[in-house]
Image: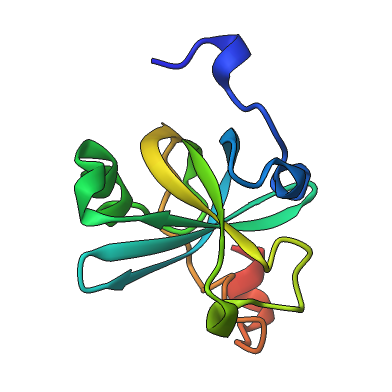
Length: 131
């Protein structure tokens, strides 16, 4: 269980200046991708989006990461590390770093969504959106 003071130490964009340091962020799961045991999670808060990386050696954090759904609320702790040059995302303020997760906690689970909020180009009819 996370105490109130340990909820987060940085916002997603605010973490950028802590490269190499220990960071805890909290936010909504925007997107989750599983690449053969390594899980990438984009977490967003009011400041922006930060990519989390959960490696197989993360133990329980990997199990938690594999069960996440869009819009779940999480708190993640780990070390902020530079991304490999070929994976830098210049479109994001946080695109040069990622959080290598050592601890991952689900703060709230989201109910299944009626349509994808990830895909900016997906169209949902007005009746579905109003549901």
